Image 1 (cartoon, protein in one colour):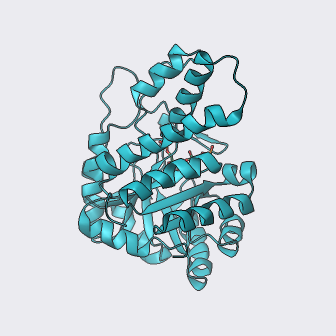
Image 2: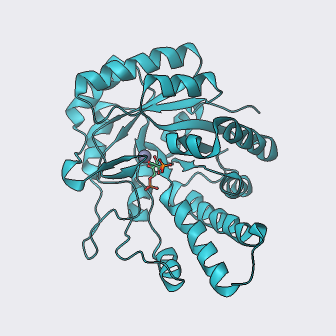
Length: 311
Ligand code: G3H
Ligand code: 13P
Ligand code: ZN
């Protein structure tokens, strides 16, 4: 099976009350850990590549790693550009074999967001590629952009219908309280997503797939291991998994996870070196790190996304 778009995945996910995991990939071990988990659980997958990942690992290497994963797993896998910041970047990924792109013009005024999204949609659809757009602004760090909590803003349900009909986008990322990175909520506070906004959006766009960025849950077990093995991550808190599961039962069809992959990998490697200070063969510490990613992704597929057995 070749790489697929997200069209059919989202239709089934919407109807079935589950979501597809969109995991960020930056190297071979990450691709392998994620895709081995999905294969064992027969789950559909979105592998996503940021501008930073492309700069780090190179477009061709990433494409070939993902193509290898398609061959090895036989799963429906979509290859998605995460947070495309310009028409040129989206075009380069469309021309270069991606099946889905995000144009993130959410920081621009409404009319500019519509114009740029529309431009990407026209080019993408001419090439059989689907487009995710964003309305509302998430807090946190993505690529080189750092948005403070004060500058973030929830999506306005009143805007979504006009935005989708004028842009022709295929899915919409909304801001309901998730944020990028490992420090999402203040320690001691009770994290609460605005599922009421999601419900309002769903009423305005029945049947339309919604996307949640910034959806790592920052498992405290990983933070503890990191801090017990020379790290310093005080106050790292993520999105409660039960709230993500609830969102997946509603209109959310794609849930983005990157920070939890980083935490799983880093916790494993820090622990490994603390226990084996004399080791220096990268396979010795990258193997367990890949396994830690696999276990974490299996947990997400079963307990958060609900997409096991849906490939
Ligand atoms: O939302 C952003 C993702 O976590 C990608 O992060 O730009 O550092 O690759 P990155
Ligand atoms: P996290 O930082 O919560 O993993 O979010 C990742 C993301 O939204 C990628 O686009
Ligand atoms: Zn994101």
